[in-house]
Image 1 (tube, helix red, strand yellow):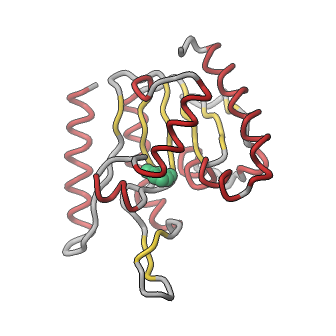
Image 2 (cartoon, rainbow, N blue to C red):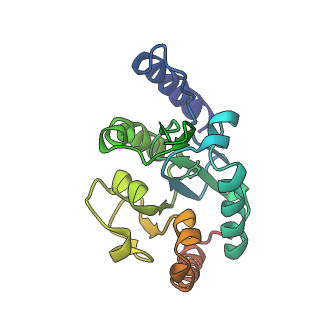
Image 3 (cartoon, rainbow, N blue to C red):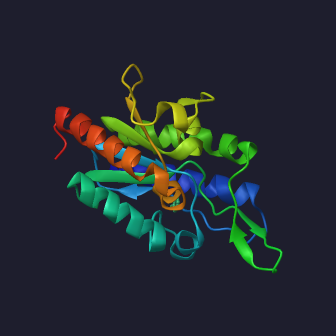
Length: 195
Ligand code: URA
């Protein structure tokens, strides 16, 4: 897998340079263990991810560590990436550069790369975090509020839909639901022999 991933990353970098000519953007490609049994797909990198060029570091990394802790799993068991491979930003009323949700066009632009990444990693399960990742992976207009905690086992590879951990922080009422979904995910991973 290493050679395939290196080639894919290089091709992705070339694509990135071509479409964002002269723009101050950083590519944040996926990373993880060779032959990872499962794959996590987030929405898009934030500030720290763009600074370090790595997915899920900084605050999002802490959320991820808590998430993995609940599942009793290490980062080494998984491959982690995002639906969109750069940090989408806007300028706030106070003049600060802040994160924004990616547009549908941006998600569509990166969708073929996400598919190629999944094909290269060949995980036994893809776990999507939030609506953007869910829709980018499945190509369907699904809503996380309706399908969270569900495994799409007919898909190849199967997909498990989870709320984005950041959404749970902002919507405290989701805490219990999220914990139940994590317990379901743990059972699904057990059935797949991921420990
Ligand atoms: N949120 C995401 O969805 N991905 C990251 O890499 C960081 C924060």
